[in-house]
Length: 195
Image (cartoon, rainbow, N blue to C red; front, top):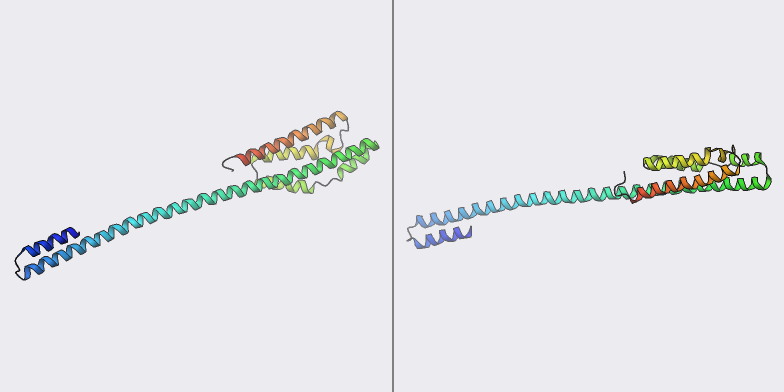
């Protein structure tokens, strides 16, 4: 642009001063310079607007990714926490059943054992199980349901089967089911994209 204005100025100086002709070239040079300046400003603003739009889109994508990551981390923490509470409740119930069984072995009183088992509160465990059902994956829910059913509804844990063989098998199965639930929770927590 400046080169064109310079060329026009040089043309103007090289021409003999005829009065109107010099003014004409000066005016033409100023007009061309103004047009090129205006075009340069428009091109710059257009490219800046596109650049800003890309920058805003990039910022929005970054915020969306961060929000998704925060949600995932929050969900993982919630799943971990509710399952920890559920596991603590199952451990409490298991310990109460084991203590009642130990007292039965000492007293040899089956009815007292059944009464002790029925008096074990399952409210905390049931609430924890419902929380697990609300936010966990299907695999975790199924493992928790099976563990809870084994703990609270099995013949041994209700006092229906009092044999030592059934007692030993029931305890082994309890620990196997507990480890299955822990493995399901661990698998969820180690996954890249919790759903």
